[in-house]
Length: 597
Image 1 (cartoon, rainbow, N blue to C red):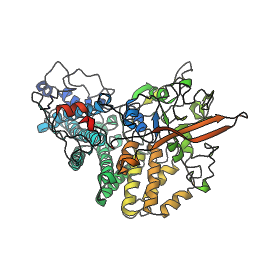
Image 2: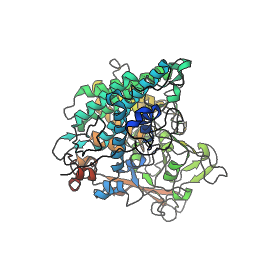
Image 3: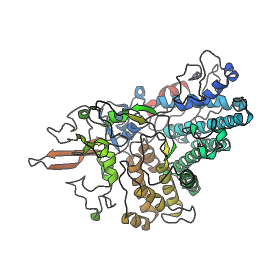
Image 4: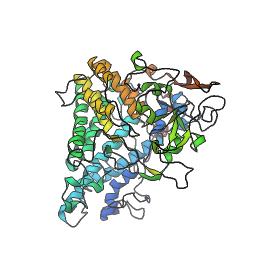
């Protein structure tokens, strides 16, 4: 019989300190599990450690690299695990997702220890009763919210149709596991997992403040409440998580009967987050404006709903995105498909004759967002986007230093990536300016896109009576917002008016393209393709790059149909870790992973 013993990961080890120096000592390996309850700092550590278990940047297989198994990007390394998956040849010894299964269950077990029999909630943390209550309620709410978050991550990564033909999620575990006993878990149904996550979000909401903001609490309470807890779970984050869960649950792959109430719930919860940002953060504190550009280097950027802790003075994104010629590693590149998704500066897609697109001058007069996200042939990396030219990209064959194949540190598509790159960094400077980097798990734009997609399914593009906001109005926030470099968005947008007037189906395709542009390299595209499609054929397509020839007169000839990879997914789902399948006979593997069962 296949069984496993699951050890107490994280709790009995010596933990590294948190980046936040208040109320976060973690459980110590010198004390037993029973001893934890004698030390309030260790009880808090059960919750606090979960934040340190989360990624702090996009430079991993669930961040930017994850786009390389979508039609957005291609990994430069031909032996990379994600590339092997995209080509349908991933072996059981190459699993790039195993670590996330462990991380999520480790974290779930920590908060389950806190929640069991209200042990955490009944712990005395502070002598003053009022402040003790603030801490107890916050930690209880955080525990439920963190469990919801890690469960949601499990559902996204490992949920899918099992080999038994049923739509399955993950094994729901809401009690601390007994580490002296053998464990043989079974996956719950997909719907059961959704309902558990939603229930935990609602439980969390009962205990948490709506947000961690100083203006929401009395001055005397700000040691134990308020903005010093920015970056921890709060009430509005639980509404955002619910919106994301409902959006996926409403999508075609997971909602074959098109239960419209799921779309409605996604819209309702996203609208709650939108309203909070507009009417509270944007009015009371005046810290948020929907027209502001995203600041990837500010861990306190007001457009954040929920983000990781940060890595200070970090250059990981710059190293991974820049080519070898500019001291980077060129680990991935954008596809031609993504480049073609960007419209022209007049808002029309490049396939529309009114756009003015010229395939032999393909980077001229494009949507301003394009220039803040993609480095193309002849693009210049300017200091702080306006100063001296630090680097000019040369992607032509037969001499271009950044051309595909010219170096193992060059993108294979002849496109490099600018998004999340700090343009004030130059490794040649006497004093290198490295900025903080973190991962914005949920931000303003994500909620706007969620609302637009869901509301359009319920009432179409232009109806604003039901929610007080229409799908078209929501998307307009993004189209008119400043781009990542601070430039202006669309001041007039006749194409938005046109597609909205064309009806639900046309506007749905438009929203999906906007979502692609907004979320590229954030590790979301694969999940979007998965939930929108119902067959593997829709995912198994070629991805292309640009062929560039430099002519004698210095002009360029472009071949924008150069195939780089042919995707050959055997499954629309990620695999349940193979060693877990070997150890637990009750687990059912996702379809298409025959060698992993």
